[in-house]
Image (cartoon, rainbow, N blue to C red; front, side):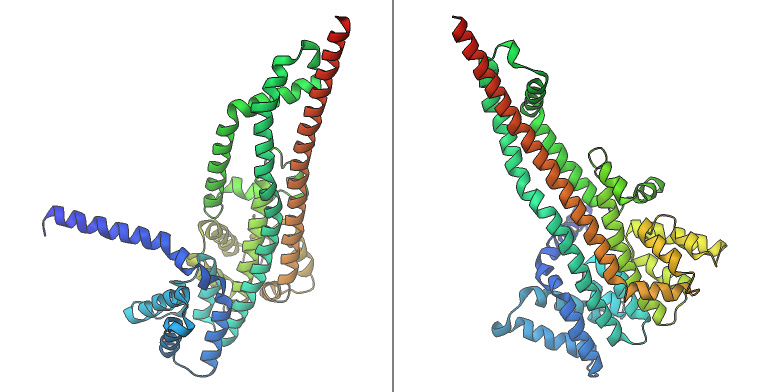
Amino acid sequence: MDNKSLGQKNFFISVKFFLKKVLSPIFLSDFRGTRAAFYEELAKSIENKEQFRTFLLEELKIARDPKTSNQSRATALSMMYGQLRSGEDFRLSTILGVAMPASDRLMLVSLDHSSNKVETLRILAASLREQALAKNLVVKAVIPPAILLPGISAFCWVMATQSLPIMVKMSPPDVWSPFNQSVRSFCEFVAQYGGTVVIVFVIVLIVFSWSISRWKGNFRAIFEQVPVNKGMLLFPVCPFFVPLSIYRDFQVSILFSSMAVLLQSGMTLTDTIRSLIPRSSPWMKWHLERVLYSLHYRPAEYMEAFSKGLLGPMLLAKLSSAIRHTPHFDKLIIKLGTSEGEQIRKQIGSVTKTLNTLLLLSMGGLMMYLYVGQFSISQSLTDALSSAAYRR
């Protein structure tokens, strides 16, 4: 094969890989949304002594049958069966992982070490439902401001580019009191730089969403330790404190669920952390490596190891209090990963509600400022024109 043919082949392989990476989440979105039920079905299959290969093939037939067609599920099952047939890796975490989102990796790895895979799969399904509830809390907090934002932006734009320029042309200098001038300056800024601000905002939002699972380092750890109440006060200046706190708590709830399963299977705490590191996101991997490093030099100082940024202030205080009565730290992790998961979700819900209130108040304040400003300018203009007409 000449260099040209080889180059074309490599190009098509690269394009195929890129399209698969981009399109797979779209094709699998419906299946991933109901994957908790799939884990429970697999648990029931194992409990009934059915071979894994048979389970995949039979479920694939059902998904492809015109009467019970489910294209997303069929795609996922065919990917799993293809991984099984390849013979490269027979671990359940690898076979299931080809069709599951990256967020399941920490939990899936526990399957490979669990002595009771049926129970582990059911814990995984329950954990996913808990995560779904936590996600719904975040979504409910973000949706109302997201709906209001386009309307507020449109109002600002119309006022800045249509209403205010007409008023400026008609207004004598005495109309522009300090408050009216502040509204005018704001609207002129929107008219001149509004489009740029929107583009920059969208870019920053995309970059932040992409980097939240990848950004690591001491600065990230410091930002994550900012208490939620202070993060709310600093929101106008540093709006990323609160989202980072929500993301950390959400990921810790997943981590503790995974650790609980591994610890219950008989693994030690350090072995559990080592087994989770390869399947973790860069951010989580960095935190777990710091915990492992601390435990290596101070094996009995559990709170010190977990207090370096991974746990938020509230959860850290809870652990510090509980460890006085339960000297076995692994039992605390198991408790947090199972029965105490509801409390972590409530904490996430509390933070998201506060964030929702803050966003709505900020938008409401901006709307009130513009409405009052428009009324004040109109009233001042009317008074000025009336005075001028009276003098004539």
